[in-house]
Image (cartoon, rainbow, N blue to C red; front, side):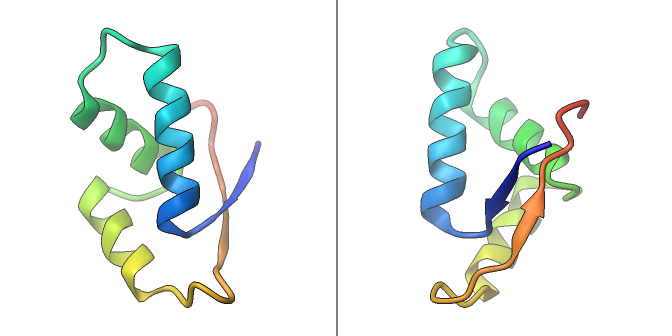
Length: 67
């Protein structure tokens, strides 16, 4: 399991890595898959949590690689 900070930059970086690994998959599918791996029901709930997170002291979340 990997821990990532709940920041726009970190989530964007992970998504870019997923895009390179799965180039045929749609961006929206990757967003939903990433959100699920971080225990969110939707990508929008992930985005909303990131918006509410203090950028100077972000929470870290464990990714469930099985998701």
